Image (cartoon, rainbow, N blue to C red; front, side, top):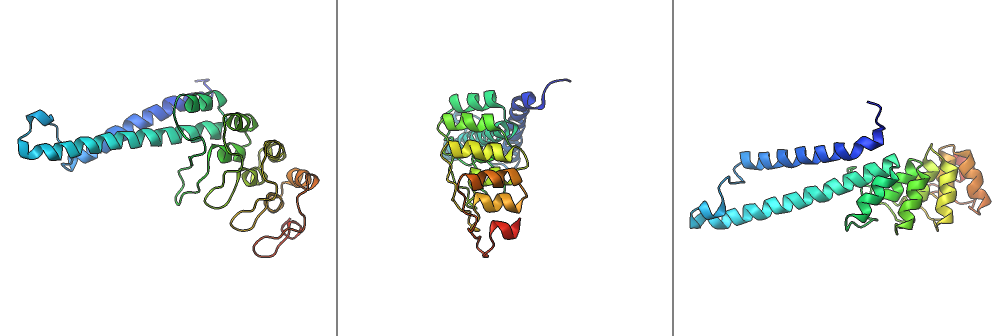
Length: 216
């Protein structure tokens, strides 16, 4: 009781990982895909199968560990927990620009997308300082600046930060949306004013020919 939500996240993730690993291995054992015998105890004809099982277990554990890391990175970015985020990045050999979202179909969003969408300026600053690509593109063509322009949390402040770190003002999504079009579509007036002041094109149109004034 009284512990901030973000502070409990690492423990929750570790607990989830252990449960997921145990559950997955139990399912494999139930289907007869895993043997409880040690390789040296098996008849020679079965040793090849045992080696395959061991390789499967090793692959499964590595896959779950990688999934665990992605999930942890996403939770840290979404909650703006900078200390946890830095720890995860510094203590692993992860690609900071690897997609971390768990949506299906995959959106390809990175930690920068997630932090920007949730209005965590400190987290975005940290990620960029550690080498994150501020112009990383998701599978839908959205960059962090589009997520910031869409967000209801510190939209203008986040857009300003991203621009100061090299974000492309004119980059478009797969639907032809610029950050200005996104901000106008979602009613982010402060972000619209900022983008226009920074040189965003008010005449830019989306894939259907609508301008920011049309969608506002």
